[in-house]
Image 1 (cartoon, rainbow, N blue to C red):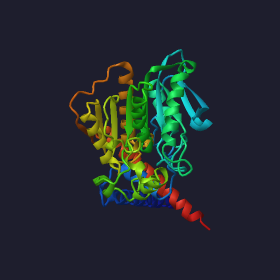
Image 2 (cartoon, rainbow, N blue to C red):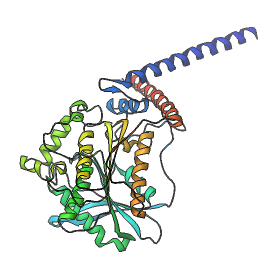
Image 3 (cartoon, helix red, strand yellow):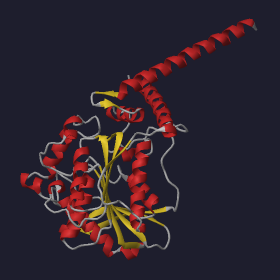
Image 4 (tube, rainbow, N blue to C red):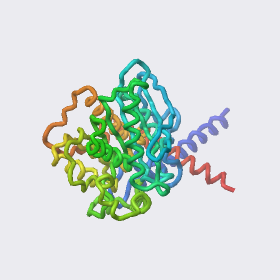
Length: 393
């Protein structure tokens, strides 16, 4: 039996050494991923960006090891999902996805415009379904997300005309799905944030439906060549949006240079931003669109539009899409939902004086949780990379 004890001791020793080596590899890897030319990233942001930029996961991210990294869902009234087609300009129809609570209602209506650089293949209802669904649950609202037509086949103003037709359809048929046309809001991210705010301009200019609120998540607000520091610093594409894609979007969506100065493409330079609804704008620190989103908030305030702007530190473009794995994404989603609920309940208090709020990366327990999950995900990614290496012929 003596030899058995010796074997067991050696097995324990070797196992301990292997575990220590693995932990060291994970720690060094995460440290290196956190180190960038633009600044040091929080562990969770670094791990997520490493996974995406090295094609270890797709943008509809799913890198949660079972029973280790929890999701960011929300309970409540079960939702009904409907995929419809609605008529728009030119006698054609576009797909629309609707999530609505069960019950009599009437429920507030929220129009959601997905991001994706206005270009086919960069964003869709499928890539943004988690946000669409979660907002319906968290706000107890009917969320209608139109799949507007995209470049290069369809250039400006097709996308905004499709999107506006979707608003008119929602208002006209609100009674059929228990919607409250008096509580109508618009939300969009990135290119969809551009479309969302353009909807408020079009509704004002055309004396159309009254929009109660707008939420713009890291929006693109100008196609013009204006000096913006964030576009210069974070243009590599590592933070999920590159200068190359921005130029491609401009070339394909607005091929005529005259289009760049139109208020329905570049609301940042619009001459009149008055009489727009209460606004929440969320930006990300490591995002080429950060400065123009915040500049747009300032311009809205100049026209006495009630506006709140929040910059989330330590995160990249599109971070709210990753709310299931990033605590900052959950914060951003919660802020969005809270703002919309307050507007719908008539309790929103933005205040008269505009100021940019800067939200720090998760602290306390949330920081510990994020770091623990980051190392767990890193272990999963390293293990996956190793398995792929050994399985390669």
